[in-house]
Length: 196
Image (cartoon, rainbow, N blue to C red):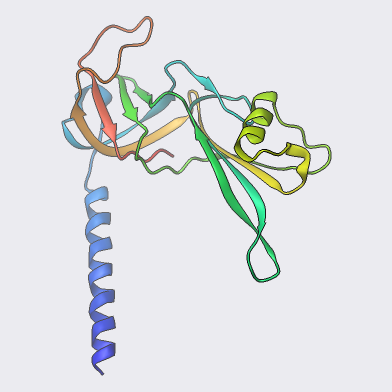
């Protein structure tokens, strides 16, 4: 009886915590880039790179991208499983969310992502990858792409694609410099972002 009581209390506590978090997210109004208040903010607009960077695997111009290299390894039960052995991402530590009122930088470090564009490549006969990706694979695991036991996964936020960001807006005057052709504004940054 006491074990059921403990489990019931635990389920209630976790459920209530998730409810409070969901309520907090739903109660955050979507703001315009230049009129967003400092603190919890929700922004929607187009993703812009500073400048756009070609992704590692496909070479698509992106505001942000990340790539993972998976390799087939023994799992100790006489079978093999795919294990992530290397990760790479955009060199810029930020991208911009732009709407009709202006643009605001989003810091990518420590953020959680849901990126809707994804490319998965397995190294089967006839599947070619870019020279840049081939060199990255070779330096990450010391083997050629044609080895037969690897998979590349690329997730990306394409340049000009839709972006939804939820995070904490703070004044950060020296974090970023304006892009060419953009006038200097008081810099703001959104951290803990979620991009769709």
